[in-house]
Image (cartoon, rainbow, N blue to C red):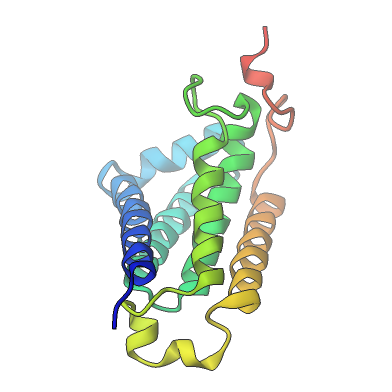
Length: 179
């Protein structure tokens, strides 16, 4: 029997997952070269390869999250993407999303929702549940939370350490909004 929690998890997974996938598709449709130039403008070395990786993880991780397939790993990809976006593009703006260039509010919310879904589990209306993957114990609870948060943040830190040279002021919270 399906309950309200399963329906709520399905709605959250689909909205967040499809939104992430569309974000990646937008990078591809808009031209990965342009997205690569944007990454370079943020201080990333190898802008084009970073754009390809970001689009791939947005599309793949988003679709897997929406389908509830390998949910902690899909959530980890979302957490990683949002952590990189938070630090490289939004941190200097401050908290609120309504500020020019947008603060961390939106990307932080997406990352936390992905971690929460991973901790709760994808629900009965997921491929993890339908295929019995959820029964192995790593798909929800503390394991789901740890997998999504630790793998996501570790991936983000790896990318930032190897590919990003922060521009002046990028690591001062809200520095872009100060005059």
